[in-house]
Image: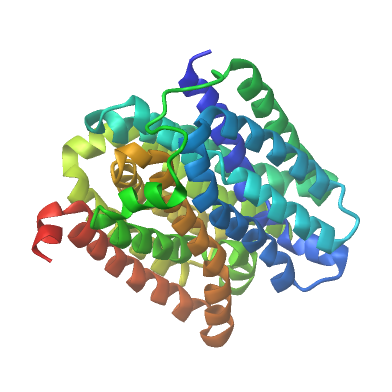
Length: 390
């Protein structure tokens, strides 16, 4: 089996596990008799350990081989998803999400670093875009299947299905992935040495700061989508978990459209203009959520926001693969760390803002911040001449 497809299977499973809790926040809260806000923290419990594991898993992949690290992590993720489905108490469910986040931390970043080892910079953004097809498909199906599975069989079934997906990916990784791959550096390079190479590039600090804010701004509202739909829309039924899953899944479908058309978008706009268009388009979509009266209009806005988000994010991700070619696993892992720290902290900030000023003001504030983010990325990360002049 081609290595790209093996990577894609692991990336799909990781993406599937990422957002599957969002549509079942309210059923989990009811089952364990906890508040919706507490249940929503299952997302942070996954994202923050994922992020905090990155600074360790990236150098481990650089030193001892990305393939072996990926194999161990995908197997561990499948086990933790099964443990969550069987958890008899909320603290044990929370613990399974924390452990699952740690294992998932070794998947997508090292997959992307492996692609960086394989493809030249001129072709890399297109190949990363193709890998997004696997990642986004997983995220999209994770949200949608989770919502429908909850209605049909209960929230436990959403985690059991995810565990099955992870088990299949683990079987593929352990049977078809090469035992070793060319390393960018010898096995004795220290963590300090590897990260020293990353931060020797003056773009690194700007890029990592920008991706952290990106994760917080774009994903901070996701765990509160059910609450936003109840507060801002006239819904046609009572199955809010299904509607939430569809709205969140629409974001992923937009990403699929980006992934399928990335080569054409690059030829049409170039990287810098694509970043500006993406940030402005996403801002308009998020602002529109504050006033749309029907949930399916929210789904349409989230579809457009998904296209716009990946126009910005994939450009930043491609830059991360070139920060330090001799420590590529470390560089991409730290990029993922910043992104998931943002995703973990985003719900805390957005939740506080939502309950302090209401959904309309909170969404408009996010939209304005996204515009600023896009301009900073273009000035300090994508535009090398501007950086050299700073």
